[in-house]
Image (cartoon, rainbow over all chains, first blue to last red; front, side):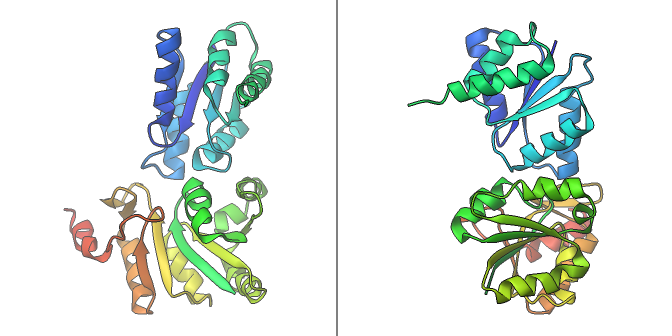
Amino acid sequence: MIHGVVYTHADLGMAFCEAIESMMGPQQGLVGMSNQGLSSEGMLAALEEAVGAGADGAIVFTALHGGSCWQTAERLSRQRPNVQHLTGVNLPMLLAFINKRESTELESLAEALTEYGCRGIRT
Amino acid sequence: MSLLMVRVDDRLIHGQVTQGWGSVLHPDRYVVVNDSAASSQWERELYEASAPEGTSVVVLEMSEAATSLQSWLDREEDVIVLVESPRDALRLYETGLSFESLNVGGLHFKEGRRRILPFVCVNEEDIKALEALQDCGVEIECADVPGCERKDLFKWFGNAASGN
């Protein structure tokens, strides 16, 4: 199963996961993380641990292009070919992740989720 | 010319800097002075890609920083400078970049550092470098984000050194 890590500021990453579970029920392989109080090296080590070493790979979701979580996820996805990074996380993107991660391979999943995330923004 | 801020932050460019301080100070350019980041093309590009719209990020080696910075300041650019440690701030000052105040915005926990504020952990080298800058007349300001209460770092140093 493809793992998901929501990595952002303060408690937001954890809150995203709680929101998903409040709609979809308990989830395996989905964790929220905070960058609070960590150095750049500490952030990378924490993210590596959260992503794990699963053969199916993982997607790291961040919220802010250019932020410290975004940088850390860029570093990890560069080192690990089976880790994809998407920024601009929102609930439609995460809901699609839960619904599609067992039927879609990693790269196509990342592409599809970008589209679902964008479609969630409208007037 | 305007040197808007010189900041010690071991994350260098990140949200607090570009979103928090950037929206208050409105720089034209963010300048990261860091030998390790400057030595890797990939790291330089990562930081350059962090620039908010309408600004740019440049990553410089310490040896070239003071001269390059002076030339941008002479062209009246508004600049925020980022270094990862008090030691690098002192080196920058000693290589010829004159600044009146230094913002200590983020020194996160690492082996050998002691936490004195939620966002400031220091070791002996950090304390010595900040004291040396203060002795040169540089005002040391401690603030992670705009509008927060300014903390007096020096009153905590005794505790950090003695292990309390």
